[in-house]
Length: 115
Length: 114
Image 1 (cartoon, rainbow over the protein chains, first blue to last red):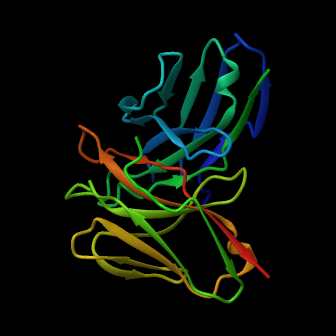
Image 2: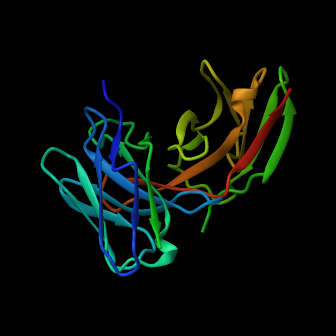
Image 3: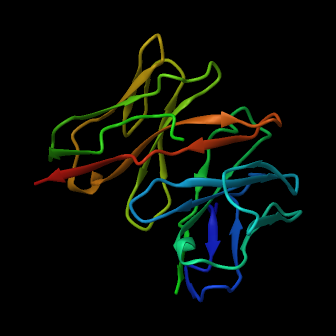
């Protein structure tokens, strides 16, 4: 049973560019959350998707957007990249259909470097 | 704003028991308390979760007093491979039933020495 997978593992972008990160949830999970983790800090919640809609959002600007597909996979898009967007981006999945929707399983992350 | 407070760092020796205490004074009635472990450049890994009293699994124990304003993660007989950052989390329920997000603080950096 595959866990949460993310792609790519690493990428380097230039300021002003746009980036798309991808996540496949753990088998049986229907909810995907995205977190940003700057070096030396704890992960910060970006947003959460369920039934292809954004259900919760953290304090992130509109440059951060997402999408969830019918197969529950998800994308995180960041436009007009800033140097401060350099971070580890984590995807976490959970299942709303069980009583344990608060159990989130994290992927290995995508390391984004903006130069 | 993080809803939990925990020590920034701790050192321990191999074979010792480690207890990390977390304060969550404003925990809501329906919040669970969850602990995660994170190694550098990896995603957080679930350790244990509880609501009240004591929970034990194969790797750790979690002690939660009756008022639930704090909790203690206990790691028995730590090894060098337990060197990591440990996060104590409570969550926020979303408007839609079943949606839940974690509020991470800066965690506790545990260093296990030989």
